[in-house]
Length: 246
Image (cartoon, rainbow, N blue to C red; front, side, top):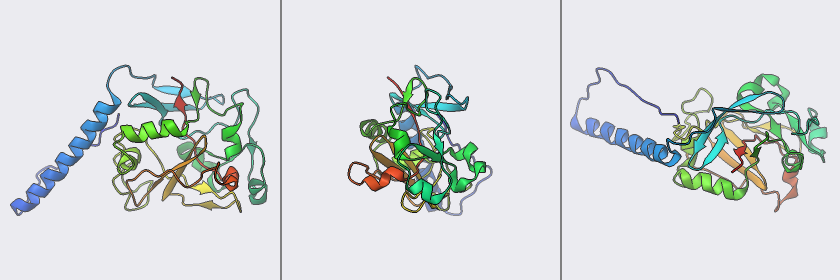
């Protein structure tokens, strides 16, 4: 659970209206944080971290009755130790028919903070890219997450990291009150293999599609890539957050 506390020292307002507007804003933020705190709960906290087969260690966060990774996945092997195919070339990426991963812009400097991008074949592989005891979330689990965070009109703001260090301006509504710590890792196009929207958008896989967050909105979106509707998305590259098994 992460709380953002804004402290103003020696602050003076020139008129009562400004003071009232500031007070109402503070009350709204306090209400939002209190709602998330009560929703996520303070008992039965999960272990602080989870480790994948490559030895990468991820912080975790409880949101309601779910436990999520608080960073994007960056594993390079399936759970049984078999390597996932690292695919850099644009044509190789767009023509892939097996599990593949890459770094954004094929630059490993992005991996530590933003994780890796995976195509849907890697998501759907029965050998699984999730650590032991974890899995790729399905659409129902995404719906539970959104409901816990007060619905799709506000969930995005509770999930995004605040400020404009990682996200482009204006990063609307971002508080990270949930602790999900979403970052704008962009995506890789499955048609031409090019990279897009780093710093402005984040895209994550669930088992049958994607969910998205944008710098210009505090909403939660989940309609960009629906693999059952359109197989072209099999070769798109998105980030991954795993959820703990019940």
